[in-house]
Amino acid sequence: MSGNSTVGRAQDDSAAQSLSARAIEAARAQGRSAFIGYLPAGYPDKQGSIDAAIALIENGADVLEIGIPYSDPVMDGPVIQAATTEVLQRGFRIDEVFEIVEAVTQATGAAVLVMTYYNIIDRMGAEEFARRLAAAGGAGAITPDLIPDEAAAWHAATEKYGLDRVFLSAPTSSPERVESIVRACRGFVYGVSLMGVTGARTEVSDAARRVVDAAHQAGAQRVCVGLGVSTREHVRQIGEYADGVIVGTALVAALRDGGPEAVGALAAELSGRA
Image (cartoon, rainbow, N blue to C red; front, side, top):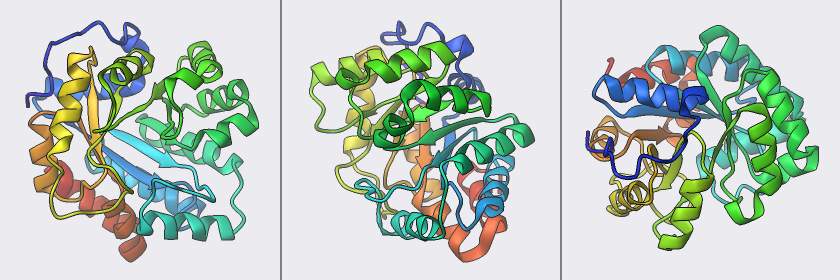
């Protein structure tokens, strides 16, 4: 794996306290990239999402992302949109996110981050959201629509409660923007492999390596790639240069079609345990 480049290792001095950083570094010590899995909160129901998350971790996921259902998910492809729409129509409560995170962390001890559009955090209040997430054992949050320039309140709240904050770096990000993203992140940088929405694809965009290289050159210690990753071969290819590989749509489709058991089977395949 070449993603463990030592270029610019100044980022994230607090890595010793970062749950996701520890998980990614543990994978690095084993000579591999970390496997990060995404599942929506409350899908197919609250207990089902907990069971699926536990199955995912028990079958090789190093880090877990729990997505908070949102009414206008501009980054989500049709599979994830359909799942979260179903959850919202059932009357999803934001409190369920913290309950799910707590259940999963207590059962597994894994690093669990929430992925959420910032409006949800802002509506609750950055400090209150951070407090509740930390109390549930959460590692931090990925905020796809938040940019570092507008993240002062979130930065302060995550510092207070020791949470990771993960921003996205895209193929279109300027060198200056990449530098600001790297400085703002705690835990890892989320490298977007292509422009567009989430979804399984047959090939990984060649832009992914450029995104990872740019973030490493800007000082990022850990860059994990997501969007369009769905097969063991994708994981292997991206693992040659990235510090972590993020899979979402394929896992959600497995949960839809076969329940938590299918999630565990796919996780074992993706992680190379099968």
